[in-house]
Length: 85
Image (cartoon, rainbow, N blue to C red; front, side):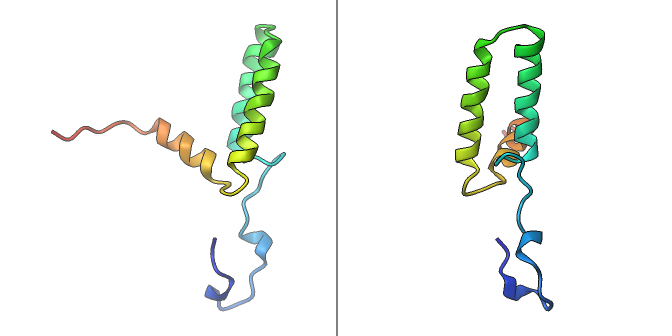
């Protein structure tokens, strides 16, 4: 996190914090909504409600200390592997 003394003017701490919805970042919430719509609403697999609830709890505990963890993980998964001979 950025130190408050680095700015020449007073900066509110709320401007430096990450916006979270229901305790998780918006990309994580978007992943949960897509899984909900796909499995529970379209395919009528009600068992995935438990899985989505479990994923929400896991995401919330992982982002308690670092709110950027889910974004970094998703970006890392989407990067193409480069192999140097």
